[in-house]
Length: 198
Image (cartoon, rainbow, N blue to C red; front, top):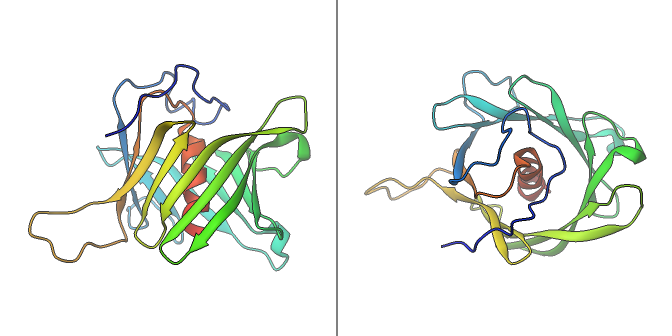
């Protein structure tokens, strides 16, 4: 059961080519590295018809500050780049740049235990360097389980795909459910990548 989403949803302009209007029912994206259209090392987010909506790739560099994850839309255009910082923060930028004026969010880990991780997300306000806490992420990365909160509402959550009479549930493929009211699906994908690999 999830709480209602506030009418003023967070909108950073990510993923609008894919979803020009906010859907009125929950949307499931199925996450796997084994989709036939993925390149080696990419993580795919497919809809219920099997079409890739987002893909992510990790670009490594000998210089730590240059290593990043890039979120690509269905046309393989970069919409978000995320960088891990030495102080434990992650910084998110529009497109495939690291310019200070393109920064849109920061993520800080507030709890890190074996079976419990919590992150706090700060959206960077336009025309100022100030940030406001807008999202919290709580769950267990090992179990591919987390809930993303926007205020008191559940914005999205992940779950393993259990089958009837299945004893062992594989963690290689799992589901991301995005609830109505959140248009920035690309942002949700970026936050999930940080949760899983941060």
